[in-house]
Amino acid sequence: MASLPTNEVEVEARPLQLYSCTVRPEWVDYNGHLRDAYYGLIFSLATDALMDHLGLDAAGRARHGGTLYTLESHACYLLELHEGAAVRVHTQLIAHDEKRLHVHHALWADELGAPAAVGECLLLHVATAGSPRATALPAPVMDAVQRLGRAHARLPAPPHVGRAVGLQRKARVAA
Amino acid sequence: MNERLSQPHALLTPYEGTGHRAWDPSAPIPAPLCLHRTPVLPAWVDYNRHMSESCYLLVFGDSSDAFFRYLGIDEAYRAAGGSFYTAETHIHYLREAMEGEPLAVTFHVLDADHKRAHIFQAMHHGESGALLATAEQLLLHVDMASGRSAPLPDELQHRLQAIRAAHAVLPAPEQVGRVIGIRRPTP
Image 1: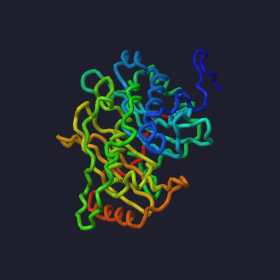
Image 2: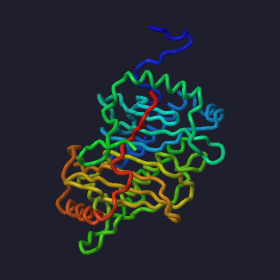
Image 3: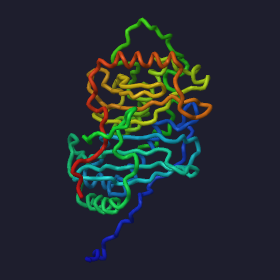
Image 4: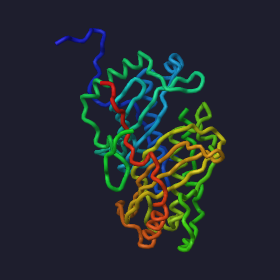
């Protein structure tokens, strides 16, 4: 079996843990529970951390002249979180092509034995010079994406991936 | 960029304290409902003056609150121990919204049972009508004391079904039932 070149770093087959925070008082509703928009904010911040990890931090975005736009997101709110809860996001790359990433985030809290929320998003690489247009991921970013993709292909698919909203759960064909 | 969201959007929605209008069984039910309008607030935009992703959820949330009040659920109802939670949300981001632009949100009840509603919201530019974003959601009625889902009172179930019936004439929006995925992903 061919061995990897010595300068290739093999990515471990586990979700990335790139973002954690504490639930702020201004994020909870009249019941003292984290409001759904703020679960969304936490997932956005985790996506930002993933972009940094893949080489699309502020310097990378300036160097390559592009960024990632969120086309779609799908979140399931499973458990309540309160002000002060310490939370962390586990991130998994589900699939990618030359310009899109399908990412899954799970929001874990120290005191819970299961995720408080899960969310998927579809991200599109867009060149920002002039009017934004979809374009292929820059080569060094694509390398990082492919390394991550190979490692995460060894992980089981998270249970909520591929879900459609509805009173009866019916999986439909992806757009 | 994201520090702006640490400034509080009201803990409460813009409608808190306004109660609810009495339900008039003889009044026609608009299809869809349009119960919430707002400009894009300065606290919601990023360095490009575009509304940030999670702030779309704030606007949809305020629109949901307006819908609950239309149904008859307000702070008095919640004080008596019931509430609606958003269990699931699928959002499509179609166009950016700039600071100061007017937003108008429509609300379409797709399906409902004794304790859940499957709904679809569309956020439009308030003047041009351009579609900016959509949110397909599952709303769940909960008994606060037990923390578990619970049936709506009969009268509210009746009203919810009346809205669903009125909305059955609407065409199914193209985003309904969609699943996130990449066909033919790179191996």
